[in-house]
Image 1 (spheres, rainbow, N blue to C red):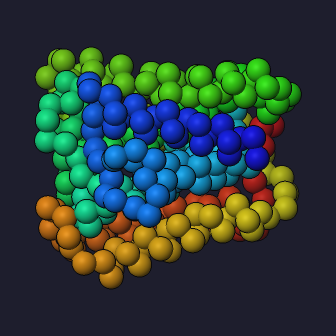
Image 2: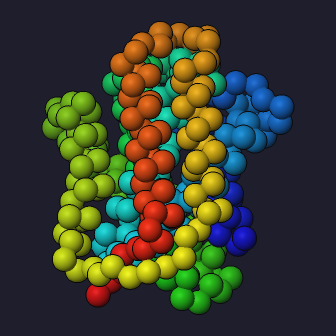
Length: 267
């Protein structure tokens, strides 16, 4: 419960910083039943909680080494969020600004989605997991460590912004930077952990699996049934990419949260 509350506070801070900050103003959500501020809806904030909570808890079940744990969280976070992120502009769930934001962070796009938006999902998962690793709050969840997790999550996520800025300044396109960084963050540490884990048994967690299952099922159906209302045209290749992300997320969570009831643990 405390983890969910901390993630809610992180969500409020990050969402408001990206919407109501003159330098970082990136997007505006469509009107919803409950709006927190003019461009921020309650459901957009609650997304963070389900998104990061399931990513953290599922990655924990892998029992990876400390350096691979943030990568595992990033992997779950990336595939959990991509079905949502890809469809937003096309179905007018939110709109991105056309202004120059944070030195062109939103300039290069795919299906109306800035490439850095996909990178953001990876970075947030990485940041929260790294903050959790630094504070080691799960060993002794004191109030001080919960506060540290809240304070460190966003700054740790911003660590992944540095390489992007350096490469951009050198003239490298984000079409090259983002896939390369995603591979480096999501895949490389997990590959390095191979051979340093062993398989043990653990109970299945149906509730943990239910969250990504319902989420991805909804957005996979939305991908097929929604009416194009935004400025971006829905194309078959975009729908295929959404399906790939959603199915991958379901397969990952099923394998880790359910499957044979087994998971990896550090040897």
